[in-house]
Length: 269
Length: 270
Image (cartoon, rainbow over all chains, first blue to last red; front, side, top):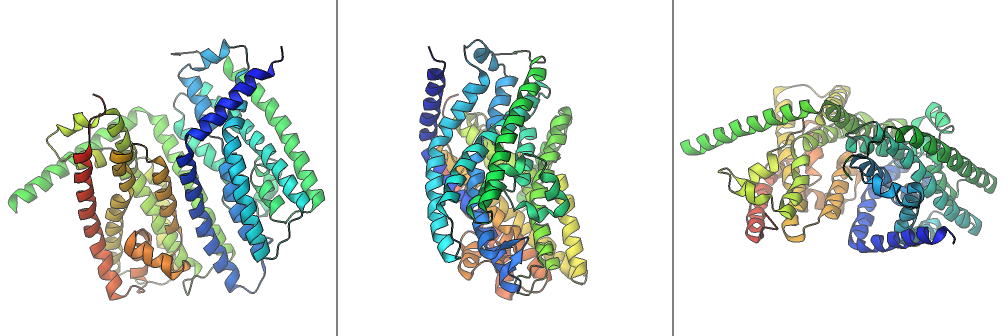
């Protein structure tokens, strides 16, 4: 018998779970609107006063689109999986998964994908409306192929972000009190990923350094695919880099988990 | 009058006891204490990015130069520190008290329930980075703008900070109080945090309608704007008065809502 039905089952459970909190989802959509609004006014003031059409390498239209898209992308790719996994490790709930004939990694991944399916679809619809509206307003034409690439980039960045969270969550094997720790790492990951401002804002040295890290491929890259800033060859290169980092982070997470697991005590449970 | 003062003194003593208890508890979990500070530093970094953008793009809002904007970001950072240290932990717990029925136990104590529930926990670590960074930013902005350091200016600034603190208490407790009716108000609290962040920039950056709403309807924008605006002498008489009255009005409102909420409370378990 194929091993897949169990993961598909978990995936479906994830979808059901996400449908349970629709009001919460709607509210989180509304709360995403405020940071966008603040940044919209900041950029409007910045570009409005100055004669120069570009700041940090972005035209006004590109910057506004980046701001909106990055806020939405951040909502989609943020997994919060590190909290869930860490509490499994801490209170011994991991035990029950260990005796099951499925991998913990696989179960968590498919639950996440299931949970995000609904969000993903709604958010994409929102995004397309936004792009259609603002793209027309600022004269940014986005070819169909960019939109297709964007969907692919988003799916990849969700997986990449899951792998980053999964790796960071392993820290729970070593540290006992960690809820603050994940809040900090989560925030830093968002900043480094370009979730607050495009990474060019950090200055040349830092954004050059970020080229060697996986973070910018989770928010910064997909957002720039859709705001028309990247040409096709750059997009292809970025997609390949996403595959590369998914591979690397997969190996790193396996390694960290193998080392961490030796510390696992299975308390409680 | 005498009894009023006596009551105030008693509550002062109780509040000092709260601080002492929290200090002892936090010293027991030192890693957590340090991690709490680290979290706030991370938040601070994301706020400092705005400062970077302001200076790099030489942002002027109306006729407020980057140094002036720094004063607003600094005030906002200070207020975030005070909020996270004095109120945040308490407000998060309120819906838990309601859900688990723990409120029953707190109700029988011989002091004001609202005081007990909303001020009992003080986080001494979290505010440190924000307060330090906020005060630094305000000082830099203040001196760069050449605002004279007079007793009058310091008094004005302190007065509007105090007013801001009361407004913060009143506005941010609202989602928590609503949990008496709607158990889970996490989403609404999220919206309030997001609106809170609108204070990151001076209010003249927003269109007039948003400013009006933010000052008169849901007075979020009073929190970080009035203190710097007052020492820059950009606050007209009417607004100065409003900034002093609005915390009192809000306290009365919150007190009334709280009473209604308690009447509505039916013990969950316990």
